Image (cartoon, rainbow, N blue to C red; front, side, top):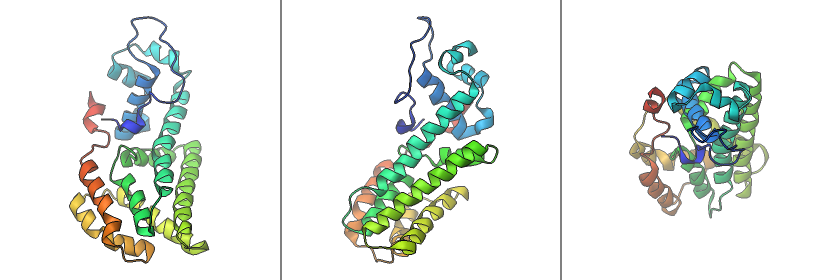
Length: 232
C-alpha cells in the first residue's frame, strides 16, 4: 500500500499516452518507483523492474521521463511534498497549549498516510551516495526543525531554548526510526505524557492528550508501504 498522500497522480505533468493501449501513466511509474524506493532502496529503482511491475514495455517510461535521473528528481520532490510538508503543516496547526501543539506533530509519526518513516529512511540511505540528495535532506531537516522551533516560539519559548527543544523532539523521533524500535501503540501512548513533559517542561493535561489518543486508535494500524508490494 502506498500512502494516499504520496500518490503521484497529484501535481506534475501527466502527458497523454502516445497510443490508446498503453496501460501505465506517469503517475503509475512514479507511484511504483516510490514504493520500490521505500521498500528496497534507490539501487532497485530501475526502468526494467518498474516496467515488469507495471506490465508495460520499458519504452513507455521514456514518454514520461527523459531518463532515470528525471525520475529520481520527481521522487525526491514527492518525498519532500509528503514528509517535510507534513511536519511543517502539523507544527503550524492551532493549539491551546504547547503540549497540544506537540501532539499535533506526533500525528506525523502515528499515521504513515501523512508521513512515511520507511520512505524517510530510504531517502537518508540514498543521501549517503548522492551529494544532491544530501543537500535536499539537509534542507528538509532544517525546514522541519525550523517549523517545530517556530511552534515553541508561539508559546513563549525563546532563542536557543526553542531551538534545542525543537532539535531534541525531532532528533529523538528520527532516531527512534533509525534504531527500528518496535513498540506497540499502547506502550507509546502510555509514555506520551512523559515525553511531552520532557520536550516542553510542562506537565500535560488530560485534554492535551484526548485528541491524540483518538487519532492513534484510528490510524495506528495503517501500513507504511507494504513490503509485499515490492515483490510483485
